[in-house]
Amino acid sequence: MTLVGLLLLILVGAICGGIAEALVGYSPGGFLASVAIGFLGAFIGSWVAPKIGLPSVLPVTIEGFTIEIVWSILGAIILLAILSVIRRPAYRRRRYR
Image (tube, rainbow, N blue to C red; front, side, top):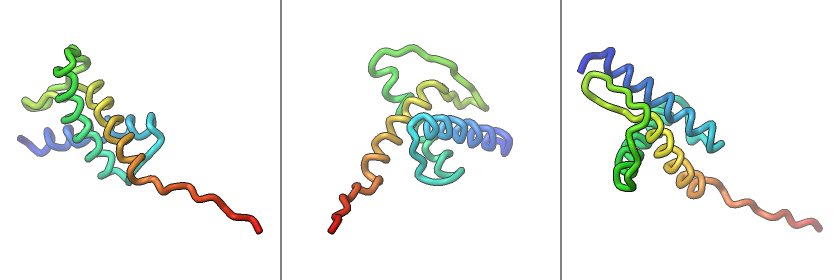
């Protein structure tokens, strides 16, 4: 893999993660978190989609690695939904005296 291919994969992962963060309304961090969410979403989406019989939608191939954009975003949304439930602090009631 060349440096350009790696940078393109990072960029695609960041875009997928950023779109998922915008749709969910929760962001665990900055650019590197978006990249990690995008890559993990790609793994989750590419694992779940064939299991339930969904077709390949909008695949992008970079130096032999294929990322399905739609399933990557949906996988990232699933991951962010789980993270937002776990990491958000519970709202506390204020007691007025």
